[in-house]
Length: 519
Image 1: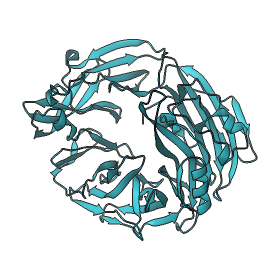
Image 2: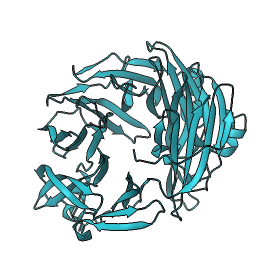
Image 3: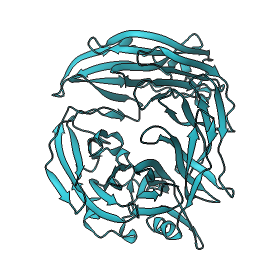
Image 4: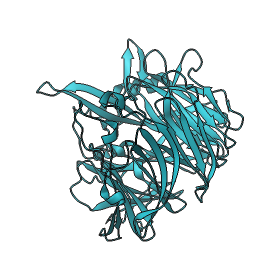
């Protein structure tokens, strides 16, 4: 998550007998963002002192298929220092702006007030992984550690497609430990945990045996230094099936174990793993949905004990028939005779109050069709906002669903904030849907590749699954510009800020929504 500064007062508000949700929208350049273009040019902002340091990854040059080589799949890194007025006051081109980094994308991050770069350099048939600290005054490299290296042949296009590229990082909740990990195409796994002064607490190179076709889909580093990697395999696409396969647990003492987790009850398959801690970080959970013969039939929650390499018995909840039928009516379910199933939901686990938990997320799918010219087109869709409240023993669940159907974007995710035993959900939808008595049948169905303006609103949902409030907070910005709920900053339990984002940005001016919750 990127960093934003607390700027604002509160002006407009909507009240009820229990909650008041207030918002102020301002134009400001003093906001951090993260953008990626289709060319893989990437810009990531970090708030350091009174300025923003932007790390720009230029992306690699386009290569022709028959001449493509791994050795040419490289990018340059440029650092920009931007003041509070949005003016660039300094620029630093690492390695004189030469494309020497890669082939994996460089990972920039802020850890213990240090701006770090984790990157590969490919030299003489060898991949070398480095960790560097940036001097935020001179915009140069202050120090560098060589972490890991392995032999890698200079392959062409087809060979590159089989390689694993992603560098994985995770910072512990207490901000005192950093994990850097990488798994190469031969199955060799490197991982290292660092303290706040960047000294290695442990380093491990191993060849853990993963379940068939499993890849790392999620990672979490505990305050203890133990880490968990979620293992999944794709069937079709993640919008169809992302099958859970298990977990790789590595402890701070360098012991490790793969724990299988690929079936629930009567041949149900867990999917779309997400690893999250409890509010006090004393426990670790994984959650997701599960499928039967077709799509999703319900949800699960399982507790992980990394010190004992143990999983609890999963808590499993089937979707009620009425809920499945409602999801189908909004376009996010399937029907075979009178049997309904649900499209995947991207869940997160929320600790509500007094040891009670809830799941919150939104449904997603893709639509494959053709244009008037006959060309194939794929549209990704974001669907209903879903919440599920559990009791303390995970024996009872109450479901709630807010109908929705729009073109997917980074602002499609909901923000789920626990408040006095309820959930305040911030989300984007068409403005008219906040004004009307919304029903499943009234949700607009999106035509292929249609993008319409969305507005930011909220709902208050109690633990019985009743939606007590659902109101507009602020109008949309433009058709291609919206408040990016994936990039919010939580300033307190009741105060967050959400920056804007644009899919075809034509101005450098940013809007920020500052939101507070009170009685």
